Image (cartoon, rainbow, N blue to C red; front, side):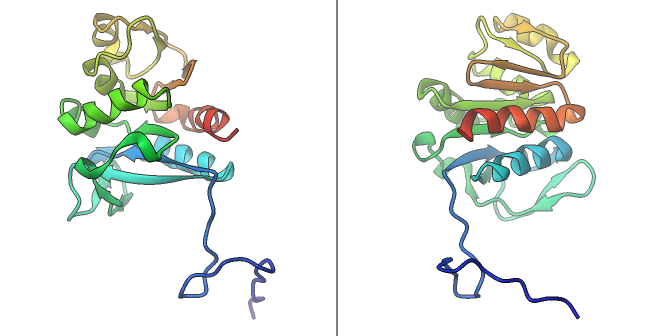
Length: 193
């Protein structure tokens, strides 16, 4: 027989009797509709939750499940066109091959530029660096990402590094899914304070 879990005295409960989670802040996560890098995204979200920072996901598709490379799939919280960076402490761009399909989306570009203009944390991993390069926000920044994007990063004025994770001010970049844990910890170190 499983023991019943006790809730903290005074904890706020929702209509179903579940504890309402309270966060210090919330980070916006842009997820491609398909082929996103699941591992790096899982580590990013988990690391943020561990420092009491929530996440809210948006995508270019909202009526269907977004699907990762392997098995992850979920419905996003809202359409990307409704999002604004005003209510968020940072922005995370999910990587993977799917990131290339949304790199030129006007709403994706708008949110990236808003995050940089408002001096908020921005995280991008793997192929998501293409989004930053096309948004023209990499000038003078040291970043890492998918090796296939090295020329695009340099053309956008960025300095490419082959390290697993690079932190340049409020910008956190990861090379690929293998950087997941380090990438997540670097994000949490910035917005979890």
